[in-house]
Every structure is written in C-alpha cells, then in structure tokens.
Image (cartoon, rainbow, N blue to C red; front, top):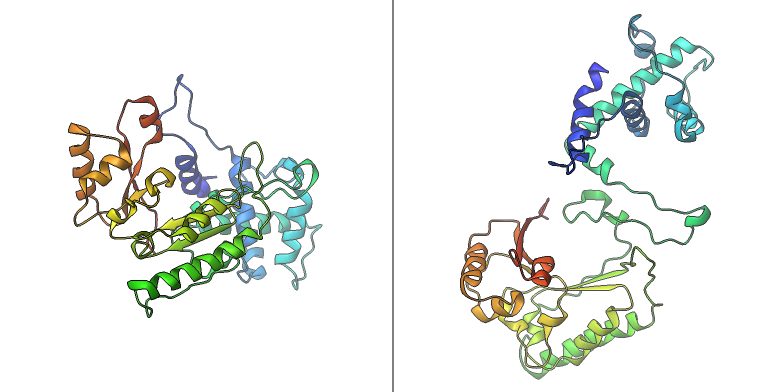
Length: 329
C-alpha cells in the first residue's frame, strides 16, 4: 500500500471538492478499491510481460495479503481471470500456484499504478464513462464527457466522419459569393432534414453532428435564409452549429437575431469590440459593462468569456464567467 500512496492521493485530489458543506469529510479510497483500479489499469497495458522477473519477486511476509473480495466485489472475478490469462497467453503459468499468482497480481497492480501516474493518463481514466448496452438500460443515450482539446491518434473514437469544405479559393463578396454560400448551406440542409429526430430522455439529449463555420462573417452580412433554416433544422436533429468569426459585429444582423439564437456565446480576446455587442450579449451597462470589457481585453491565450445564465436569471452576481480550455489544438 505504501507503493500505491502517490496514485491514491492523486485520485482522491481529483474526486474531492475543495470544500464540502455540512462538515462532510473528504472521500477516502480504501485499499481494495485502489488495488482494483491499479490492477485493471495494469492489465489494460499491452506491454510485454517478463515472467522470469515476476517469479523472482520477493514477497514480504509481514505485509497484508490481497483478500478474495478484491476479485469478487462487483462480480469482476471472471473479468480479472480472463484479462490475466490474456496478458500471460503463451507463458506456462500454473494458475493453481497461489504464490506465483499472487506475484503476478502484485506485479500488475504496480504496473497499473505507474501507468496512472504518467502525464494525463489518470485524467483520461477518470473521464471514461459507461455506455449502457444491456438490461433496462438498453437504448439509453450514452453518457459523454466531451473533452475539448487534442486527442492525437484516437480522435476517430469521438468522430465517425469529418468533412472540410474549403471555400477560401472562391469569391468572398458579390452575387457569386452569395450563390456559393446558398448552394453549400442548402446542401447541408438537405442532408440534415433526412435525419430522424434527435433522441431525448429525462436526463440527456443526443449530440449527433457539429457544423463549424469559420470566418462566419462572410455568411452573416445578407439575408441568408439557408443558414437560418439550418439553425432551425438543427434544433430537433441533434445538430450543433458553431459560428466562428474575428468580426463579432457581424452577428448584429438586420436579417436574423443571432444573439437570441446563440445558446453559448464564447468571446476570446478581441483587438477591438463594439460596445453594443457586449451590451446585447450580456444585458449590462454602467460599471458591469466596464468590468466585462476590461475582462475581455485582459484575456490570455486559451481563455474565454461566457455568459453566466444563473446570474442573469437571478439578477445578481457577475453576468459572465471566465474559463480556460484544457488543451489547445
């Protein structure tokens, strides 16, 4: 247990709040729980095993033994057994030899503790969630902890298909530019209208697609009916539309109230920002206006300003929050 102290402490730091109400104590992970977590982490590794080195491990005669409840709790004994035999496939292991089996299990627990202490591995493990597929949970919308940031090679777990339409070679102004925008956005509408209605239940809604429009100001300066239709279609199709622009004044369109339809406006640092935009987005004036304008000008790389809907609804507290993304792509 001394060897597991560091990983145990790190997990407890992540699952405990900085402060609890009603004098509630912090959660402490018991020995069986931390051994189970580390054992699963160790067995998940495809690292080549060295059975000879494991056989030479000297077990302490005074340390607490691993109790059978480590395997029987939550009915995981079959899972552990299968993973152990999978990882040691090809080795001549006498699984009836209790001493050797104990050494193997201890080696895997220590392997798992070292894995979980590497960089962001522990955070990735803690953010993993269960997709219910059987019993009364069948058909439920799966839980999703969406981590916005770099995913390296495994980004396809998250995204099934990704399409990029490059329009930078086409005209950006005039009737031809508008015609191209009409055609492309209308085509997206045709695709999304054929989708079934978004799945919902008492707790969750299904997120099916993200449509990200960069340099969106080129699509906002005229009566863009296809874009309005796309936003309307997205409401019941599980479609999220992200309109990104460095010219935030473009959202103040005489043809469509983008402010009213923007669920989550995100503002990064601006070279200059129209005072009317801030007032429209946050419904503020006077000292509150000066405060948020100063907050926007002081934003650093990766920091954002968002609306605080709770404060706006209650009419008290700051009407904005500052957040910082975990990773930058």
